[in-house]
Length: 84
Image (tube, rainbow, N blue to C red; front, side, top):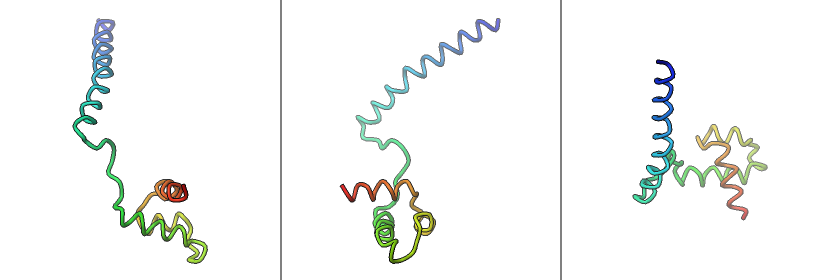
């Protein structure tokens, strides 16, 4: 009995694994945004300005992140993009 239940569960899991990439491809083709929403561009620009002036304003990256609500990883990633 348990073997049969396990086999059915495994089959269902295989179906889910097969359908997930298909659903992602359909969503991409439709133009649906995948993932969570990003921060507003104004907030990010304000954060980058504070980040670039952190030597003169004495703020750490953690303090800038707390003040603006932009995650540290986003600050570092956008700062890296700006230097390239």
